[in-house]
Length: 249
Image 1 (cartoon, rainbow, N blue to C red):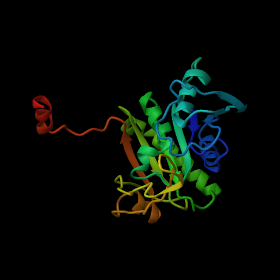
Image 2: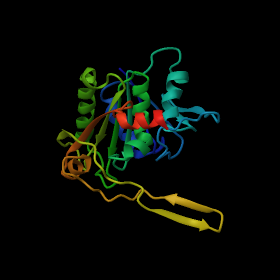
Image 3: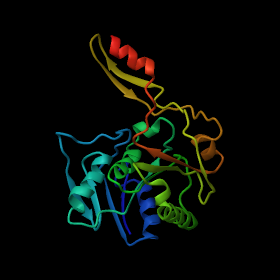
């Protein structure tokens, strides 16, 4: 099984090393293509017009100047262009939980979503910033969970779906399906400089960790690994009244 790993924290982040260690317990065909620096909050941005570069830094390890989604594109269109594209794409382990609104902002999520867009099973992993260091038992547990996800991919990876896994602070841990929460992120900004006509503004990753109990935050803080199955084509029905108003405007 060929596994591609990426993230948004950068190729030197501890989380991607941990995920690689777990993946290597499943397969000896593990590749890393990750940003050359932190790309947190880049969402599903791709480098249209500006382009990006990719360079090999070690055997089966590549650094990318672009975004997390660009890393997947680099794999499919250059690293593996002569065949043997990945069977599975893993993203993370993100430094910090990815819950609720993070699904929209997260570059970690974009890696798994880009895999889904290309018909490849994708799984995103995140963990709280104050998580414990992985033990050998923790690596075995995570490897076993990845194998279980892989073996059941026919049940969750069809038609643009991917998995979002938020680990608790300590693993091994029980795992449960979660509801998507309503935790608000980027609730504050810092205005570093301003005058009458301009300002330099920095959004902060502040959040209130709101939970309804059975959403991701509630499960994480209760010691569970929280899993959601997401898709890129989610939509709701357009109300008939809205269409009528458009037609008569």
